[in-house]
Amino acid sequence: MKIYLLRHAEREHGEKQDTLTKKGLVQARELKFKLGKFNVDKIYCSTSNRCKETIKPFLEEFNGEVEYISDLEEMRLGILQGKTAQKFRDTLKESGLDKDEFRPEGGENLEDFEIRIKNFISLLKNKDEKNILISTHAGVIKLFFKFLKNETITKPEFASISYLEI
Image (cartoon, rainbow, N blue to C red; front, side):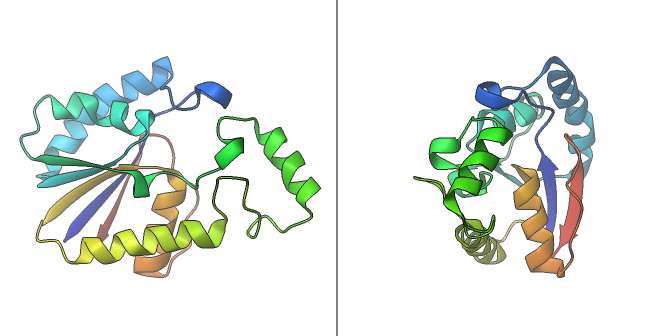
């Protein structure tokens, strides 16, 4: 199975973080041609708007199945979702916990996030598709490499495509 991991195109920040920037919209249109070369059988896409918008131009010509999966979302921040990075840092400091242990109200900590992605990977391994595109987030992509290749990678760029084979 070939897995193409697509990080969403450039996004806004703060409360508009689930919206693509003008540059991100251009990146999404340009991806249409790159993605067409991969002979994708199926697409799994995060339920976030920025991931959906990133593949939208490609879907104009794609004839396969698309499945929108909430498990492909970035680490869930609960009450801090859409807040500034400074607000996150302040709340983390107030908690007195390590960043990996910290779980915002209604959100996840690192262990929760990793378990969610491990479970999705386990399900994926039982699929029959040969070429899969996953439209998702940097943190998810990093975990795919951690669990499938035992590699630590740097944060993927916006609209970048990473490749794995299992």
